[in-house]
Amino acid sequence: SSIGSSIWAGARPFAQAALAHVSSRRGCILSSQAAMGGEEEFPVAWVANETQAVHIRRGLVYDSGWPFRLDIPVEYQDWIIVAVCAFIVFLWCSPCVCSKLQNGCSRGFTRWVYTKLHVFYWALLYLTLVIIMFTIGVLPDWTVDEFTVYLEAFTVWILENMQKAITCFCIVFGVMLALKFRERISFIAGMEHITVFRFSMWKFLGLHTKQRPVELFIWKVEGLQSAGTKLLKANDVFIEGHLGHNEPMRTRVHNNAGTGCVIRESLQFNIDEAYPSTQLTLLVKDQGVMGSNELARLLLTTRELCGIEDQTGKRRASFEYSEDSFVLLALAPRGSIWVALAPVEDFDDSERAPLMSDDALMLAC
Image (cartoon, one colour):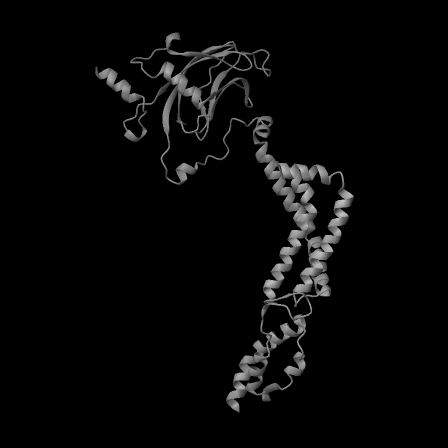
């Protein structure tokens, strides 16, 4: 009838695709040409008959000539093949894997296998063949020829993409190597004191941090070496500071300072007590015509800065440039610097230094 013909015209593409898959991959009895040889005159009942003819999966069966068979959907059989192949690859790589482990069984297996590698791999070769044949035997929709075709196709795909894989591996290895030796690389490049990415996850998430402002007072520097680029002129000294996420800070240039000069300047920055290992780098530099040269440097961690703060800025009602108010620190490779550290008194309670509350009580008394 016309209604049946219209229904078949709509269902025909899906039936063709299903029968083509069954006939090409799993050995259907009827060929797709014989099944589809009716054009528009094919009855609708044919589709129902072919649907009923689809194989019904029975799960674990024992009546197929093999001790048992896994009569399960094709997709699950494919995943079983993939899992078996991954297990076989792990067995072939087990000597390398066990050599990296630290438990007693792994160390004992490693000592044994490296003395009998030829025996191990010959035995593993026969075991691989047995495992593959047994797996193909219990999976009714897989054959040895089909497994060989898929294995060959996978090998060809691996070889075709080997160059891309090696390139990606080299990039990942280079990034991991750079991250592992980032401190040495930055030291060789002379950038160990520079923070390239000023990003804080705590600030990004809006979480509270122990960050507070402090002020570093620099009184004077002494015993500096002469700049190697200047033979007939004294050093033009200035000091540059780097600390974590803070922007670089600099004093003014003191012309014709020579081996020492009085600085009498201060630098303000924020310290985060949650990261006590963060370093403050003070660079004593000589200003030249085309740039600057480093004369000496001082490295102080946040923990050391808090110790200097306890000595010089915790409980002092007045401040003056004298030896009693400063701490003498040695520079590298030579020279010395006088510094003092005090919390910054802000009117904003959110930035008020915790130590200033004690000072306010002392002054009130």
